[in-house]
Each structure stands twice: as C-alpha cells, then as structure tokens.
Image (tube, rainbow, N blue to C red; front, side, top):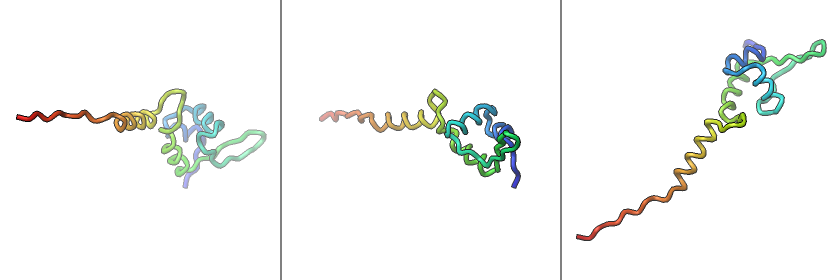
Length: 91
C-alpha cells in the first residue's frame, strides 16, 4: 500500500491542493492520518482514503448546486408532476 501527500491526492481527485485542504478543514472530507514535525502537519493518504473521498465529492457543495443535488431535484419534480388525464371519446 502506497502513501501519498495531499498534493498528490488532490491531483488524483482533480482538485487543487487548497480546495482539498479547505474541505478537510471544514469537515466535508474526513482527515487522513497526519504527522506533525517541527510545527508542520502533513497528511498522509492511502489509495483507499482517496477513493472514499472520490465517492464523497459529488455531494460536496461549493456554493453552487452539485450534480447530485440537481439529480435529486429533477427526480422530485418528476414525481410531483400529476399525470395528464386523457378523455375518452364515446363514438
């Protein structure tokens, strides 16, 4: 099992390093193992942790609607629409 840095994990996830660090700080993403040395904290990611975050990303809001939220809203709208009644004509 290989360990990677936050920068490498962000690159694999298609995010910037600062975005991933912000998600960790805000609690939107679970923090991986960390090592503190000389007052600096370094997060160490495993491949499994990166995959868990990959599954969480569609549900994280950035101030705009995520794909997951849009899908839920469209499903709700489809369920809420009443079916049109068709009139049968008598010959």
